[in-house]
Amino acid sequence: MVRIVLYTLGFVVITGLLIALQPGAMPPDRALTAETARPLPAPERDIVRSADPAPVADAVTRTETTFPGLAIAEPQTAPGDGLRDITWAAIARINLATGRSVAPGQPGSLLHAAVQRALQGTEPAAKPSGASAHAGDIYTVVSGDSLVGIAQAIYGDANMTGPLYAANADQLTDPRALKAGQVLRLPAR
Amino acid sequence: MRVPLFSCVMALSLPPLAAAETAGLTPTLERLETQVAGQPVTVARSGPACPPACLQPMEAAPGVSAIGEAELVAFLAGPVSEMRGVLVDARAPGPFATGMLPGAISVPGFTLHSDNPYRAELLAALGLAPGRSPDLTLVVFGQGPLDPVPVMALRALFEAGYPAERMQYYRGGLDVWTALGLTTGPGS
Image 1 (cartoon, rainbow over the protein chains, first blue to last red):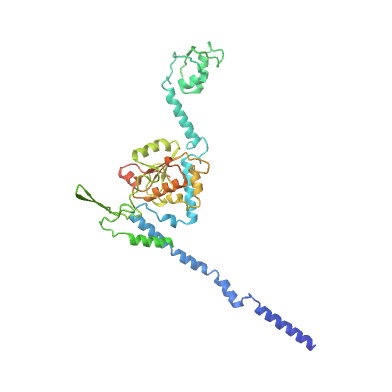
Image 2 (cartoon, each protein chain N blue to C red):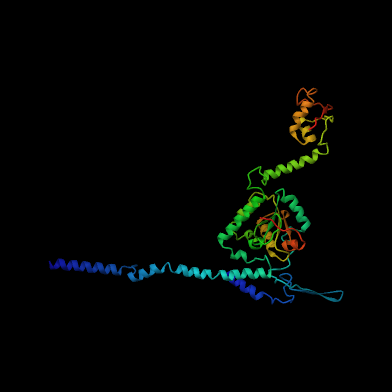
């Protein structure tokens, strides 16, 4: 009985000693302070960091007073996220200005600009050959002409092919049957 | 930490704001004293200190030409309206809001520096990507002939491989544009 009590006592004491002295264990009071202290340094660091913007603003205003628009210090001060936002905003503006962010064909798009450019390119060519054809005007077919080409050249409008064919239906058996030297009547637009 | 240091250096290097013509001409030449036909001739400058506000060169980067207002108007009428050209305001976003050239786009100069991790996307938007040659003509300007920002932007573009014949430098900038009574704004 006494032996059992002594064994139990020894077991409890040794277990207690092992628990108390195990390597890497933190004393309960120190562990508590470590846990409560961990969130504390963050605000402290924030305070240190927030002390920086004052000189930053100072530098910017100083460069602006010496030379408006001279923000040579900006690249160093721009934080990563700000730099990304500014870069993406610039990309968006470039895409807008070059017509890449607008739906194809809409005003402001690259396709629209190309179409307008192409139309402007054809109109001056049409004008010298008489864009305002009156009833009674004639056109002599030369080798290589087509009705569409003539309509485009005279009226600046390929949709005038039909009226042109209708006005000359008596001498044209087929819209493609044009002969060099043939004289076509030009309908009024 | 670089910034406070920089501001301190700026503060120390600032001249006393008197009429003393000690602002400097270029980074290597503070003032010129020479003789013309035996008479002493002096060239000095008062105003913002150089560096950074130095007299900027006409050739911002090798092969990049400088243009004037008439050429800029023609550039707006031609390439810009046909979406083959972009008028680039290289100034930082702050001053851009106060006044701008008509049709200009803000691309702050520091976004073109090689230390910008997002520069590749920006260059791609300008048409500069591996295996692709840009078809956009750029005219870059800043605040004025003393502003180093557009020159640095053009040099950064040149070093990134943007063809020099597709870049032009409007050296007059907003200062000369407004001094001539020309319209400002709107841009984007």
